[in-house]
Length: 415
Image 1 (cartoon, rainbow, N blue to C red):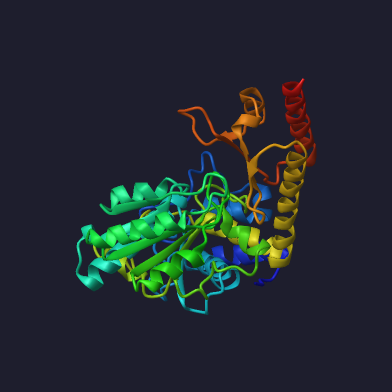
Image 2 (image 1 turned 120 degrees about the vertical axis):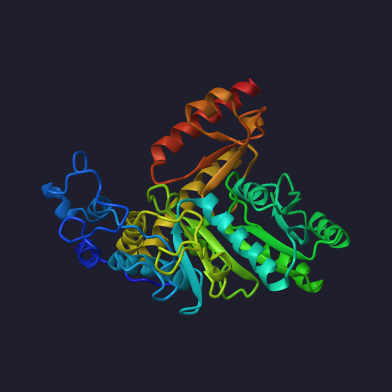
């Protein structure tokens, strides 16, 4: 797990060099592309600060990153310069973070977590349909009750069957007995193929599914399955805290990953990274996109190249060593919160390798949760849990103030 740290000067030089290799709407005779630079009445390109602002310069240049650039030369060459930056970003994520062998994967920067998760379901569904000549009724998606809502959304869109697995309400672990029973029942009901969503940090709790227990049972029954790892939240933190984990491409049971840049990386929204093993993207090739060189394999189609450049810049300015240090700092801050909650006898859930602390709602007033913008597990019913996410803006002073107030609430209950 290593990628080189670049100086800001190196990053700036690389981005501007890449932009110079792109088609330039201002200086070239471009008649056929249905796009242009950002409206110059608002986004003027002659501001002096832009020479030191590679991301903003890319945003104004407006490169289109349609397609999947890891598929060799099968992509538009109008913006080949910044496509190379996206390819380097995908390489860092696949090879350095998730231990893929060189050239053994494909991937792209998606519009968000929902798209990336649905992309995985779409690919795996089509794999079964095309390779095994089956109907959607023969395929089921397996997921825990703590799974992000994008999975049920994808099940609905793709006309698949869903199998929701219960979790322990205290430990948030998948109930393996419930998992086994529901898989066996599905087999008896004619389901032959499974797409299993495994969470590397759930959205509400930060819980991590036990992938080894899940796949061991499936392998024992010789079940035909594909595993997609939803690392929306955990992808840029969990592997750096727990380096001896099973969530990587060296685990032959895993087919694909999705990880968010707009969470831990502090990148703009619309920076989810989708990764999948080689030879799978072909199952969602849109041949009707004949005017696009190399066709399209994504749900979103056209997408901003500036987002890919931004995520690449963030990873390169820290380097793997700097990023590891930053993630440990957030986890240490979350551990401090938990130590104080333990002293007060307040019940909560927290995975030790993540920076989410979810407090039992019985130990906190609505007023306090509202004051500190804690997120409830339900806005429609009385909440059972409130979530703290220790992000870079959560400074020690804010933590101390919150802990002081929750401590006062506990003492007032006693007295």
